[in-house]
Length: 157
Image 1 (cartoon, helix red, strand yellow):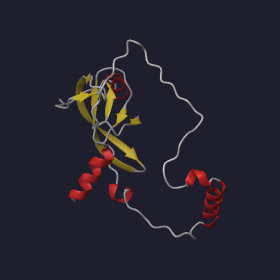
Image 2: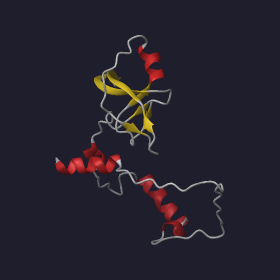
Image 3: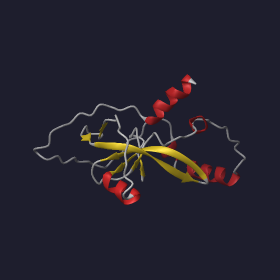
Image 4: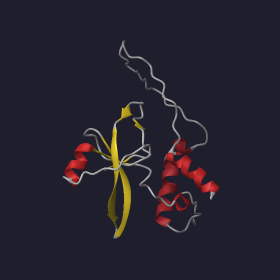
């Protein structure tokens, strides 16, 4: 199963559902409407609850079954992260890891041009982009990131 923070729900394919659950492929109806990042409609067959066990913790979570044979995706509905601890900034003392501090100082002295203030430039390199003659440009509107959505939720609490 792949983690996909762009997916609002966790999904498995019809084929995977048959392999994992065998003849017990009873599904509840789902009002969920799914689309790929590029806008193609994904056929939803239904949903079911599954028991997930991790580090001796057991929890029942919903999974959406979709038509086809694509990869299983762990969406944001399964990502129950402690966002407060993720966005917590801790001040570290310079003397907590003296050997790491020495390594850092050595790198700063060795490559001062890399760490100087301001924007840098890349010189002596040329780039080319090759595009097929029949290629048509496509515009994709930006999507709200999972992190930004979680930050908004944290501010409300």
